Each structure stands twice: as structure tokens, then as C-alpha cells.
Image 1 (tube, helix red, strand yellow):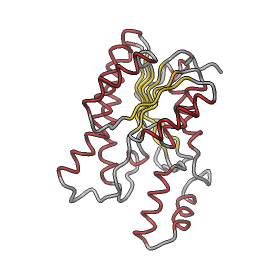
Image 2: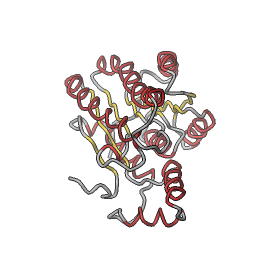
Image 3: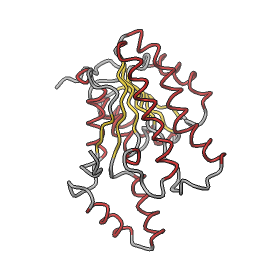
Length: 261
């Protein structure tokens, strides 16, 4: 199936990590030019090297999402080297495990800036060119916690939830301009972030990590954690020309983990 991504420019945030890296590589295989952004330059350059080895086109950007002042310069660099952004994949780092109560205002502000305001500001910055071309994709990766709040992930549950309201509203504003806006959320996908959360839960509960992972696996109907590539394949379709009638949606890639309809 031709996804219609050849010659498109995609900016993937958090592309040095498991999910972002898999998405960047998958979009590159489909012929997109990839701007690989990550706070960790070495991780971003590793993803770029993998893409180039496979014959794709990519560039690396060290990008701290908490620094809103770098948005315009970074986008100018991307446009100069690859062209204006056609596909934006928003992936932000997750905050530390915490209760939702008792967090300082400074903590809320810190993670709001990096997890919410950054996504909104970058999306606003790429939208004008998308609308000019009557074609664009804005895809924001969140967490299963926005559907079924996860205990001890109070900051994540709350802040990521705000992105659903923003995404749905934006979809209504730009749909007639050929721009689709969607949310995609992972369940238990095997990444360093999930390994970290399993480890933290094991320490809190005085259990072995293997016991925690086994309990999580038992709650997933398909009986295993997902693979980053499985997540990336769904995102690649959402980014494609084939998904032109998909907007304002929340797509779960969770192996059936979330029990609600």
C-alpha cells in the first residue's frame, strides 16, 4: 500500500526514544524526509544514522521542549534542509511517578511547559504552511492514562488529558484546510519508559520487577507487551494520505488493555 508520504517532511519529537525512533524510521521507509528531534543529541543522531543506513533522508536536532524560544530557529533549520513540515508527531518525555496531590505550583508549571505548551506552540508554528499546502498531519502521542488514569502517575494523567481537548478542538478548526489532528496512545509497549515505570512500581510495592511485569502482562488481552514497531505502523497510517478522513480521534494501540469502550 502506497501511503503517499514520498517527498513529505516529517518532524518527530522524542525520536531518540523507543516509540519516537520507531516512528521516525517507519516514516522514512515510506519515503518521508525526517527531522529527528530529541533532548539527547546522541540518541537523535543514532536514529538518523539508522535511517541513512536504510537509504532514507534525515537530520538530527537537539531539542529541549521546555525551551519555547528554540521553536522558530529549529523550524527554520528544518525548512532550509528538508522543507516545511507536513507531518508533525508530538512525543514528550514523561514526568516522574507522583501522586496528583501535594505537587508544587513550580512542578506543575515545569511539566506543563514541556508536555503541553510545547506541543501547542510547535503545532501552531507549523500550521500556516500546512494550511497553505492544504495538507498536513498533527499526531500527538499521549498515554493510556488519559482514558483510564494510572495510579501514581498523577502529573502525566492530568497534563496529557489537556492535550485531548486541545487536539479535538483544533481538528474542528483546520479540517477544511486539509489538516488532520489526532491523538494516539500506547498501552504497555516495551520501551525504556515502561521498563522504568515497572521498576519504580516494583520498588514501591517491594516486589521483583518480573512479578510486576507478569501482572501487567496478565491484564493485556493479547498476552504480551507491544513492540514499538507495532505502534509506529499505526502512526504511519495516521500520517498517510490514506487517512485523510481520520481526524479528531483518539486511537488506542494497547493490545486491548483499556477495558472501557
